[in-house]
Length: 82
Image 1: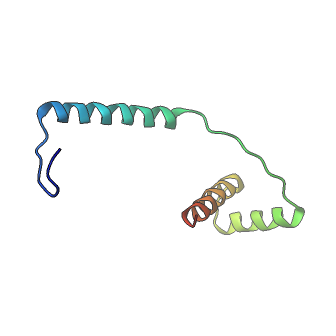
Image 2 (image 1 turned 180 degrees about the vertical axis):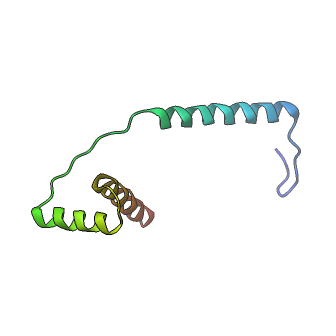
Image 3 (image 1 turned 90 degrees about the vertical axis):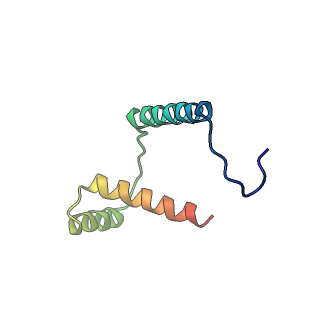
C-alpha cells in the first residue's frame, strides 16, 4: 500500500493492464451505441398534442424529435435532484 499523498509511477504492466481495461470499456460502449433503442409510446389529449405540435413547430423540429428531446431532458432533471 502506498503512503497517503505520495506520487506513484505506474509500472509498464500496470499501464498495459489499464490500457486493456480501457479498451474493453471502449468496445463495450461502442457495442451499446450500436444496439437498437427501445421504442416507447404515449397517448396525449387533443390539447396536449396541439401544444406539442406548436412547440415543435416553433423550434422547427420534427414532433418525434421534440418529444424525445423533452423526455430525455426531463428525465435528467428529475434524476439530478434525487
